[in-house]
Each structure stands twice: as C-alpha cells, then as structure tokens.
Length: 325
Image (cartoon, rainbow, N blue to C red; front, side, top):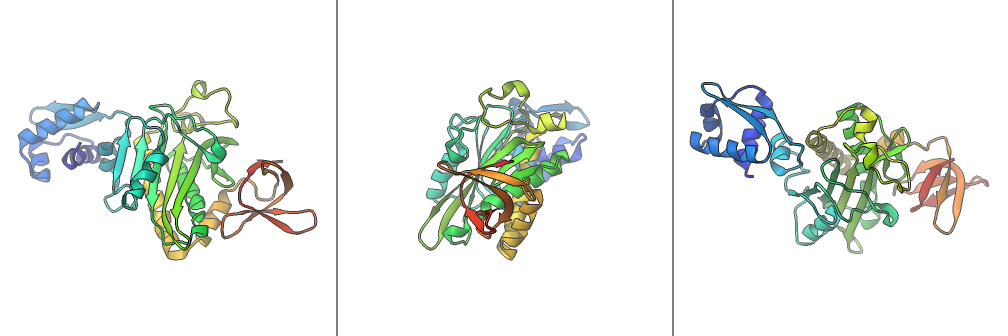
C-alpha cells in the first residue's frame, strides 16, 4: 500500500469522525475517484470504513496487523526508527533479514517486522516462540559511530526503550534482568538479541532484535519454556493494540538513541539501573562450566555485570545466565 493510502488512514484515525471525499481529495491532491479506490484497498486489507452520502468516510475498526500502512499512519515522519519499514507475514528470523539488508547498505533506522517467525532465536542459542497474530517481532538497523567494544551499550539502551514503551502503553512497570530480559512480576515478557558487524576500529552496523509478548494467552505458551513467561495482555488484563505499541517503541528508541549520541552511555546506565531487578540482592551467575554467587554490584561502562566476591573484590562478567538467589 502506498503513501496516499497511509495518509488517508492517518486522517481517518486523527479525525475519528466522517471525512468527506472532497476534503480527502484536496488533502492528498488526487481525484475523488482515486480516493474511492484507495478506500476500497483499505477495506480489502481488513479496515472497516463506513461510507455515507453527504458525510463521507469514517473508520470503524482496524485489523490487528503490523503492516506498513498502519504503522505509517501513526509514526511521526521525523522519527529515525522506521524511516524504512520492511513488513512480512512470516519469515525465519527478522534478525537474519535485517543483517542481510544492512550488509547490502540499508539505511540507519530501517525496521524489519514479521507477524510470525519460524526460527526466532534468543540469547545463548535459545529459541524464541514466535506465533502469528499476537506478538511483536522486529529488528532495527543502526549505524552508530562507536568502537566495537562500545556496541554492547546499545543492548542496555534498547532494553530501557522497550521498558519505557511497555509502561507508556499499559501503565505496567517492567524490571530488567541482566542484561536484556524484561520481566513483569518475575515473568519474562520481552527479550533482545543484538548482533553486530564490525572491523577492528569501527562498528559497521548493529542489529537490535526485539521480541515482545503482546497478546499471548496462557494456553499458547509451550509447556517446556525454560523460564516462566507472560504477556502484556496477561499482565494488564486487556488486549494491547500491537501497532500502537510498535509505534511507541520506535519513538522511545529513537529518542533514547538521539540522547545517547549526544550524552553518551551514563544516562542509559542510570535508566537501566533504576529498572534492574538485582540491585541489593544476591545472585548466581551460570557461566556454563562454573557458577558464581554474590551480591550484584551494578554494571560497568561496557555493560558487564559486576559481582562482589567474598574477598571484597569485584568480578567482571560479560556473559552468563543470572538468577536471583
């Protein structure tokens, strides 16, 4: 669907009342016949639009689809994240798709979304359940001016942006489990998987992979999940508009990224720390071949976990699975 159709949808959403064909024609600079054809296209895609003589057109309801037209109708034109949208009904992995696009020169802010993933993946090689019609699966291309060792800072930035979007849309206040799992009442609601292409002294691009359980119900979660999971719908008690949530996420992420470029990592670390679920608590960190225990002592400038050891020293951990003791 083209930009004119997105503009019609945006106008119908913003007004909430009837808009005449004449006004739509003037706003878009096209004929009334063209408006009628574009309205027909919207109806074919599941939008319920009433047409009443002498009144015009009114949007009655929208399908729960994460498509470019619906997103464009709500996303501010100035928002860096979403300048290009690549939407599909199904894919193996949005991260893999975004990585290929980035290798071929896709611009910063490109977003890849899919309604379903057949090979969704999480940290430490774990699978991410990605059924159709209920959640948000997206990957975002950034091209930051960073050294490779600094790229991990974007993991913490994206975790904060997702948490802020969840709170902004639902009123729920998620906590963050190091480094990038988001929890509601101790149950995982979102996860991130960031990947990078870099040379020795510069980052080529970073892919921010984000998966959020939006409208999953209890019966749709697999019984063999490693950790208890939840969704925004379960936690809030009401369905969540996926398009509105995606738009809020993209705007939160764009604002956080702009601030990060101006002010560096310190504001990100402070915001992440306020939401961290481990401060002041003892944790165990599974390193695969070893498990360490001790009080959580925060994160350093690279995002590494700092664990206080019995002798008073601090251990720096860059990868592992954290459990609150």
